Amino acid sequence: MASAVAQKSPGAPPRRPRAPGRRTGTAPRRLPYLLIAPAGLLMLGFIAYPVLSVFYYSLQNYNPTKPWRNGFAGLSNFGTVVTQDPHFWNTLAFSLKWVVVEVGLQLLFGLALALIVNQTFAGRALGRALVFSPWAVSGVLTSAIWVLLYNSQTGVTRYLADLGIGEYGTSWLSDTATVFPAVIVADLWRGVPFFAILILADLQSVPKDLYEAAGVDGAGRLRQFVHITLPHLKDAIILSTLLRAVWEFNNVDLLYTLTGGGPAGETTTLPLYIANTSVDAHNFGYASALTTVAFVILLFFSMVYLRLSKFGGESK
Image 1 (tube, rainbow, N blue to C red):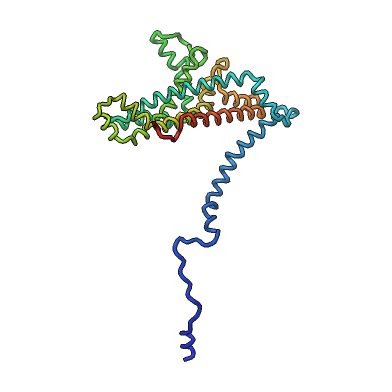
Image 2: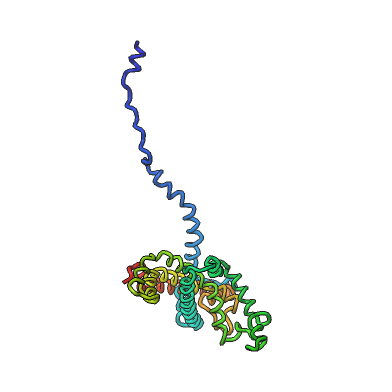
């Protein structure tokens, strides 16, 4: 009897089951940050450290082949860049010319190709694959293809000479009058699909009702393109041109493989000049200062471009 009474006596109130999804303590809240911590540390090591190293060495005289001259230089490297290095201004001018011509032509041809492959026609899938295929080719392979095409013995110039156009042994890459158009065409082949892909993706999101309504109101193809297509593509065009401008400014592999910056420095961009200064001349301190100046130029250009273009704003 006593045991039965003891069993019926009220004890501690039963614990309520915890609601699902309810967190207690600080450990579960920290779990997402702990999971992404390894990736964050890797990004910090592979991105932040090299960037900070460039800023550090830009303030140093660092040349492994002349260790007796190494040491703190302060801002003297930057003073040399701005006031005493004519190669900097020449390569910067060519870099601006290269970016403006390349990005402008790539945007023009990419927009035209996107408008074409956005139409319905027989073999459209194959046409899109052919248009986009150059973008899948690596930069090294692209350079190798165009080196063979421009070869004076086995390339395009020989076949043109067989047709009576030009002379045998002509090299477009060694002539100052033809080297710029030659490298422009080579990079166009690789860069146009980038614009075509981005613009085509945005074209497919344009509501068809807008074109139907404009057609009912009597608007032709040109007015539809100006008042419907272009406003809808505004942000895509701004973003793609900015990204491509940064990439073209930093273009090294194609120009280095095709011309090496020649002939007579005619195709030397600022990044290629930086590569030659660091790798060939082993002047890593001065090359770091050039890199820092190029970074500031790109940062300033990006901010001004996005501000003037009103990226993300509503089109009027």
